[in-house]
Image (tube, helix red, strand yellow):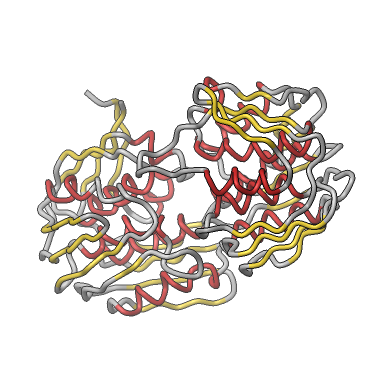
Length: 419
């Protein structure tokens, strides 16, 4: 186990360039297998989740080439299996998108239930409901989801809850289905729009992405194309919050400001100065931020993946903040680690009450999932003294060159083997 060593107390200053979206990348990579030819994906973030998914596709027989420009070419040549066993998918939650892809390509799919961050149960019942509506027979046997259909046929699908994963998986399956599929109560996240744009560039007929009703008219075949992944709104949010937490002045470059509206509104509410123009957003905070309440919601609400970083900011805010997590059960496990640094927190179910303190004190802490790790890094950057953040491998799943980017903003941070 490795750790990050952070000497806190230095205001972050400068500009950081944001990488491609993790969430968009892990949807686009398996989608490339739907095409008859090679696709080139540009602006893929160089992170563990992308590396793991590319490895899965290689194991399945796809031909992968990394170009000099940094883009990745994915050719389904040699890809001929409908099975993805546990050893391949265990490292990556998003590997369940292979269900929709394999079902569309082969009429059959066998994918082991994957791993990922431990943030509470994330059932795939809505995914399976969609596959059944398209005519597939679905079962769960020995930890493996099995789906089969002689021919997928378009159908209306109403999601009982807004689910990003189910929306994406049904979209993937429906692209090659016969007829029209309508997904109602669909998720509206930016990476769903990005996936729809990619699929349409391959010849799919997807309409309504970004609204709560998505219509997919199935086609007989998709072709390879080039597609650039959108910037990562959660990475951008994390650096903006780190700037506020350290009382600094940080600009995130290569972003789509509209995707950051909920976060920017909350940063303004707590007293930060927020500026935007074209493809950058700048935040400056000279004094102690004000306390504020948040409630995580599907897009365009406040994102659940930004909840933990925001809590690290609120740990030293002036006043009492209330955080309601509406999407996952166990997303407050990191609060005990913040308390080791002097934060005052009370947790009851999906609600956390954070009483801001004047300063945090450096301490050894343990990151147990991706966004919790980001929160602890922010806390360490703002704290007085040294913090050792263990479990850095979780953070590296979703943040490209975290050390280099933070050092570029003036942070005193290093990476060391854990003891």
